[in-house]
Length: 104
Image (cartoon, rainbow, N blue to C red; front, top):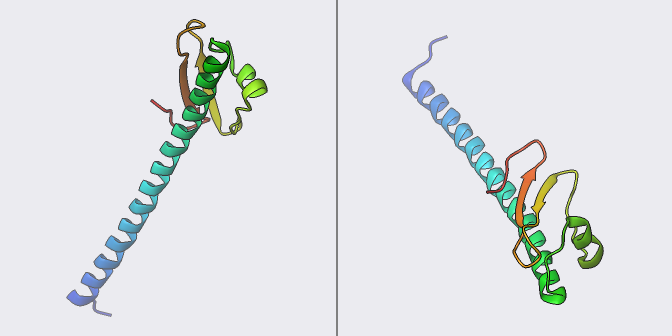
């Protein structure tokens, strides 16, 4: 069986389309993951800010925000680094996907 130039061109175009599709799906997945990390970070930050506005101080830990300000996120998927600096300074907040990339 002989393969002519048209067949080779068709195969190359097909491979290029599949590659483009895979790259597009990967890009969409990466953007969604980045957005989810930002949503969790914003939720923690907003809960801390609400606590500061109501009580005049930032809480010492996430447990306080969970109990009093109904903060919730998927503990199995995300790890939240929450380091209070002082009662009147915004705590350091960083979100990491468990076994994955981190939020900057």
